[in-house]
Image (spheres, rainbow, N blue to C red):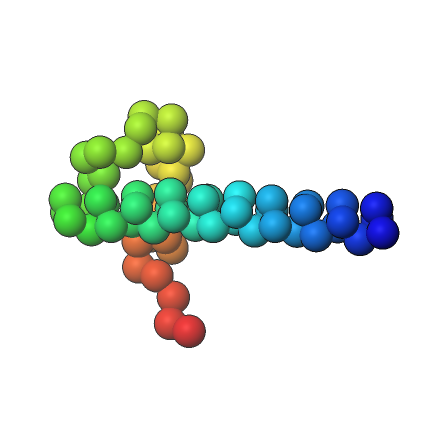
Amino acid sequence: VCWWLGYVAATLFFAVVEMSIDTIILSFCQDSEEHQGTAQYAPPLLIETLTDQNEMQRLTQGSSI
């Protein structure tokens, strides 16, 4: 019972973390799109992390699912 409860708690926790990361990246992409490719409201650390041009293009162009 303890193992199952721990597994459920960890799964829910990581689902929230994953959704938070996705939200941050989508917000960054939306900000970049609205300001001609330069994120105006993104924190400097996020901009520094995503300065790689290939990574920036991959994120801002999106993918067809």
